[in-house]
Image 1 (cartoon, rainbow, N blue to C red):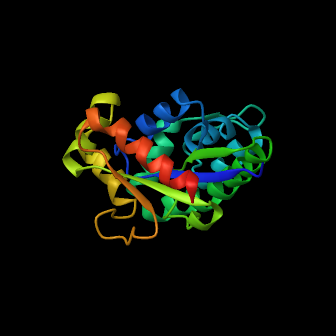
Image 2 (image 1 turned 45 degrees about the horizontal axis):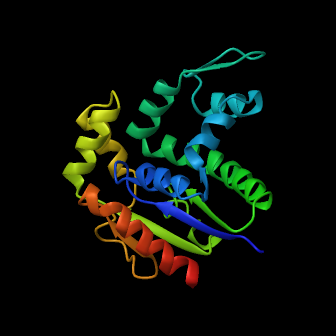
Length: 195
């Protein structure tokens, strides 16, 4: 059976990981671009690429060490650096996604935080967008990370505005009630898989 690749996207704190966890519970293959980025950051050649963009955040040459906090802080406070980082890393991430998808069959979900920002929506057979109220997103990220509200807002500002972008070609789940979320996901999956 040919595989069907479905992207899961949405703004920071929208609930992408919650959706992904539920899909794993249902037995689906789920890939995470964040996990792939984390794995790439362990490779020496990637560290050296990052050193060119963030010389203060990557120390050493033979065994380079990355300061991920410093990279994130620099990237999210400087649009040019953020763009350079995204243009450098995203194609490598998508190449890894493609490799992993070739080893799997059936329906494969891929959590892709910067899907629209990097224009990869057409790489997938379908897109599932998770939307959530901005205040709830901020509170969710604050509860699970050490980020300040200002840092979270910087990240939100580096993503597309999910309230103004045209999402009509995609399947959208509104994450406004945790008790109803599983039913919404199941309904969305049923529609996506039958298409």
